[in-house]
Length: 251
Image (cartoon, rainbow, N blue to C red; front, side, top):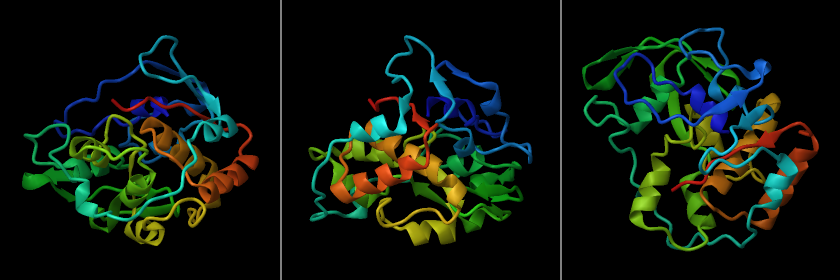
């Protein structure tokens, strides 16, 4: 999934650049700037073709999806005590002086056609493709920024209780472009806090990507999975023989 850092070049709003880790991407997965309507979004370029550069700090070598699933710690979930405001979001984003919070920065980064940005980071125009349901969205107000692994699921899956700072870091994570994703509000609300045993995107062609991104995000943040979740992921992996997972461990 590190190759996706190449695609998340924040558009022409003076946003702070992400520190990029060197990757090699096969020609079929070459990324292009998000402002071109014909360009795939970051989540289309994923895991089956990503190759991490040798020696890149913290980057894991590509793992077959089955092997990546096998690396997930298995544990019973624990929801008691969860509150959404335990995970502070949205913070001021990568550039605290540009008026755009993390949510709007993600929306800007994932635009297929860049919107106009007015004072206070008010967005007009632009277009997006929602990967969950393969819908074209032309109104930023109809987008949600989804935590790929929902906050409640993160709470369930913390192997030891996280600090407030770590929870905020997850909730606003733009160091990996897979933790947060702009999708149609309808698809995000359909997903809610469900894991892959309970919900999958309506666009079946996205299922391999969805499984790989879910697993990679859990591995990045050292999160556990319950038995039903693991079995659902393994079932998805049966249909994704060429899908691999690359991730960088969170600090």
